[in-house]
Every structure is written in C-alpha cells, then in structure tokens.
Image (cartoon, rainbow, N blue to C red):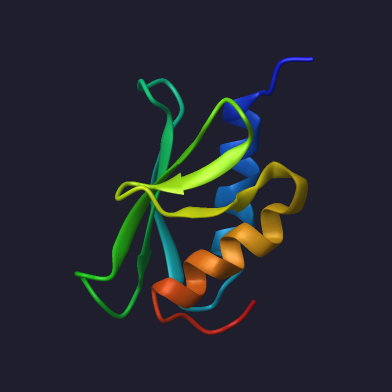
Length: 88
C-alpha cells in the first residue's frame, strides 16, 4: 500500500499544534514536496519546515530525521524539543 504523505503531514501538523509553544505557519499539501511549517510562537527565528518522505519519515528542511509515520506524536515531540517548545 502506498503511503498517503498528505494525510501523514496533516497528522503531524495536528500533533505539533498540540504543543503549547508551537504554531503551524502553513500546511502546503499541494506543493512539491508537500510540507508543514512550524514555529515557536515566541520566536520568529525558531521555525522549521517538515516533509514526509516516501518511506514514511518526517524530515526537516536541513535533513534531520524526526521520526516516522508509525509514531507521529514522537516525531512532533522531537520537533518541539528542537524548537525549544514545552511538551504537549
């Protein structure tokens, strides 16, 4: 079965948005590649764009692998840690 990257990114955005200090800037599912932009709501510079690879890995714009679609909450929590956000 083929991975639905759009659905995976929507789930990632939802999980990331549960963190008190994170804000979803954009969810670009029609772009190539599709991505979600997340930032620390207290900082204009603590921000990251995340894509979902064909193998189900969530990857930052600088190539850091956050986790997989098998545990979306853990991947979002890793991004929250990197963006200095409080836990969900």
